[in-house]
Image 1: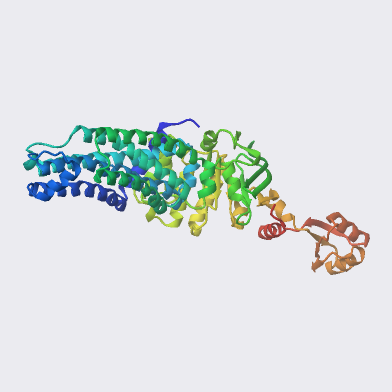
Image 2: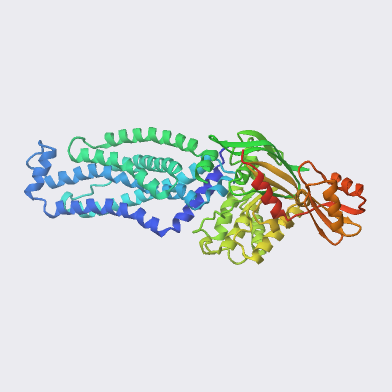
Length: 266
Length: 306
């Protein structure tokens, strides 16, 4: 069956309408970005509020024992936080498509809408593409909007300390512009794959969400000082995720075989 | 002209046989009933004929398209109404229909007007902007039927189309089915409602894993193993004469009417010959007819699963 873009777009159109009318899901989609934007702003505010606190220097020296005596520990920690926080910020593009795709894919089974859908001239690749588009686009859009808000708030709070804007910098621009969309595809791919197997949206969401554990582990390693985060490090992450994305798309299309879905789900 | 041709159609799921060796044909403009108890393989058969499942062996063509061939072409030609309407509750009726129009590449003003016409006809006029979740069960079913008609399918598969509908709505759907058949569409109707099947279907297949019987409703009703005779004189006397000439065939008499149940190895001409031999004058002999429901129950109780 040949791929027809209009059918994938029709699926994406329907999913977008459905999402717009699901306030519960919209609220849960906004909760994580709010936390990921406000928490670091609060931490930066605490650095700016008491920049001469001796404990800040102690922490800074843990991360960089060669920090010069005249250098501001608070400024060092702001920059360190921003470099490390991007690892956590990536949870947003990963997690948002998981919320959407788990509902939209496994939800078809729960709502018993799958059979009429499969009886329409719609191929597995079109179905996966439409559903993925409807999950990845909002995830990337939310990430970019959250980044915009993050830049404004961080600069506003950090300005008295650094006397200029700290964001956007090259690492964040590259990360949000390139790496975040790749992570959005990863979250979506995993959710689609898991949903196609378990067929229950809540379980699909819970299982797919486990993907954040390795990410949390990496951020933990950064905070422990074992990994030094920077543009190169995030570029490497992006490259690994790109390979995973390609494998997940191929696996999803295979799993969305009509016979398999009807036999298992309907 | 044959719209559906089924030859040796079988489907196995692992070690379990759901459908075995089905053979039947359905013509243009025909309403064909598919009867069978739950788990008899009706839905599996419909799924194979709509390209949702691949046959394990045998095959079928619908509108000349093989069911394991070009799935896209097949799905453009057939419409399916599932037992559960399968609508998107948060979307309005218009959005639900527009989604399927888009999938069929028919999201145009004339196609929407056609859909609205169906909605009007099914009593859904003015409800275009209501979320489907707010519709009653009957309305949802009717909307699902409109959805199945959006792409003008040549063959419609209807699984329990009047299930859950009030009598008026059920009649609207039945009238629509008859009208669609009148327009030349072929309709395959899965139903447990015998009176509906008798009213709508030209021919019926009774399945229970395999094909137990196929024919017109009168043909099936005649498969009763009994004969009704109009005799001269008291039918009771004819019955007593039959006991002597052809023992073992239970009978009942009512005035001039004699009803004889055929025992194994005995056919209607044997009964007629035996009675004539005893001097009974016969004016008419016709196979006894039973309610379709009785025939259905007898067939499905006797029909072992494969």
